[in-house]
Amino acid sequence: MKKYLFGFLFLFSILAVDPALAQIIRTQIIHSSIQYDRSDIEIDLKARWDNPYLQEEVALDMLITTPSGENRLLPCYYQSGESGQVSVWEARFTPQEAGKYFLRFRLTEGGKVTQISKKQTMKVSRSDQTGFLHTKDYWTLQFDNGKPFRGVGENICWESRDTDDSKYFSDLHEKTDIYNYEYMLPKFARNGGNFFRTWICSWNLPFDYKGPFNNKRYTPSDEFYNPSALAKMDRLVVLCDSLQLYMMLTLGQGGYLEKDGGVAVSAEDFFINPKSKERYKNRLRYLVARWGYSPSIAMWEFFNEVDNVQFRKNQDPIKDEYIVQWHDEMSRYLKTIDPYRHIVTTSISHRDIEGLNSIENIDINQKHIYKNTSSIPEEIDRYIAEFKKPYIIGEFGYEWDWNKNFNDFADEMDTDFKCGLWYGLFSPTPVTPMSWWWEFFDSRNMAPYFRGVREISDKMLAVGNGSFESLSVKAGGIRALGVRCGETVFVYLFNEGTTLVTTDVTIENPQNRRYEIQEFDPSSSIYKQGSDAEYVASEIGIKKLFMDAGQEKVLILNP
Image (cartoon, rainbow, N blue to C red; front, side, top):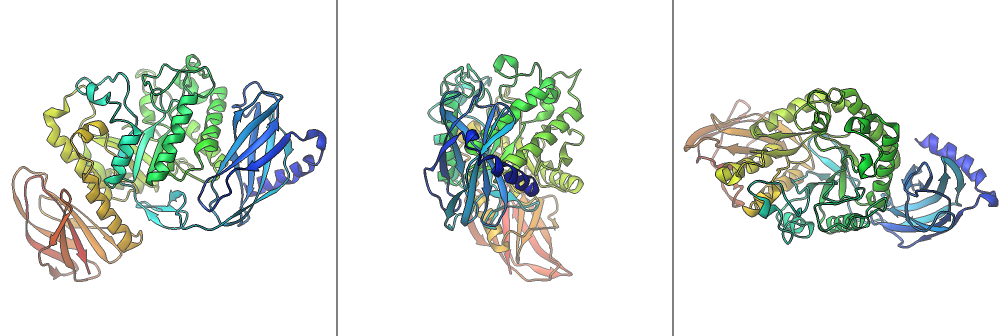
């Protein structure tokens, strides 16, 4: 990539000296920047187009040379103005290094470069902010500054709809005063959540849909990108930045069908039609140009449950290779236009697609698990062993069928919600499994439960500085998971049964250390002194531990 950019920069610097080709009129840095703060650059230019959102007609890119000498590209996006007249474009840029940057702007018309502007400099001062998230290992993500991160997450995939299709909970789901980002996200953050998943779809953040939207927050428009949805997305990103919340942004297909303003005639055509793929690349350009500046966007997720798209016609599913080739092409393209190198993922429901988990530029693999939460640790282990990539459970739940009355088994729903979080925290995954049915769990006041999970997660990161090692734990019929972070051992115990159990607990202790034991109650976040331990042959033994039916405990063994 460096050689590619250097070669073109040399050629374009020659072209740029010809005044007859000069069309970039003015550039202005609106906000000078410090490291990891957004800087806005406004560009006035003249160019001709039918549609300024299509790069095959017109494109403006900011060519960046970082203080360390890397060359990167940032797409700019169209703001206002007419073809052939002076138009206004914007670059939203967040520098990841301190020092002196060199910036140039490249204008392309009809696929041909018509100008590169003169070099400008931007000086960036150092800050103590953490920057963008990237993959590190199976257990953690890592910020630009090296600080480790684990997500304590939940699906908050959309705001209330005008008309909800739930059989028993439509009144709940339609509560506009509660189920909006401004209510849900601050509450989630106050209770310890730091990572959530949200969708772009026809009723939520529908920036490239025409409408109607089943959501009165948005106004139908014939404009190429919907102004009300663009403004909403702007506000969402700013809100997340203020709360230090990190999102997996599910991109979906957008309005890909001809009836919605797209160019595809079917779901299969979306994956194979060159014009449809060209249109999607323009969509990716716009997403990166307008919102890629934000560290709060932790991950771009191409699809929610792409296997369900594949099997919309059960008797005539879309071929695996079409879906894999599309993801390979789009992930490669996204990496070339995203200077911040956001994490890239996609998801399946339950049917694996051959080759999807092995795509080079998909950084994290992902699936969804319903009605089988107890399998989460084994599923995570299985996938990372096979594909050697971090793995996330993007959705989980006790029940997936929204035509059932969850109040009939609400206690089981709550227990499943709790267990899924701990199963993830004690497994090699960088984000805890994310529960579905956020409105239902909010109505049952489950948000405070995140506090205990986050508290233990932060302890794990602090004592181990991001290091994790699974440990074998045996506890009779009790579900038991163990992990060592640095010198400290953590054990999660859960009595899945319906009666009181007294059990012995045996914990792997290969270093033959002795420990002081604390017990932590996840529901109350109360600590108490734990039982004494016995030490025999590289094992720690705790005798006659009492566990009530449905009880959870976290043991913390400090050396």
